[in-house]
Length: 205
Image (tube, rainbow, N blue to C red):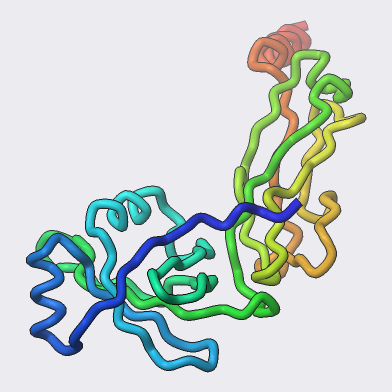
């Protein structure tokens, strides 16, 4: 299932240069531009509050957006630069690049864990420790997975789940060139403490 692409709404900016950009900021807007995709650059304005809200959500630079501009066809874009005020650290200008549906892009994708009840280690009281709730993947812009799924069936206490244990959708690959850890199933603290106590008692004998 493909991930739903969030909308990003903008208006076309009339006029270019520093004067038009300063006026946009006075009007509570953030000036920006979208370029690439075989089309001319298009100056835009973004609602300041809505843009700031999206920036605060995190992963902004690696999120694919569906850019909606009145009078223009929707286009998928990714941010390629955010200029900020040096004192207030607030956005003053933003750059986006158009992407074709066949373009490859690096994005963070949510990791979903399923079949907890089918994991003997969890049934015994083991704790699933998630190391990476999201993983950065190389994906096709027109077919971004909503999530990747880790099947916990048969997992025991002490098991470590690596990215190589996950079946990724066709055309999707990790951006990190090593077999990194996604999660593990550890013994509950009570059992770990009991194990330490037993060892200490055995040592005294």
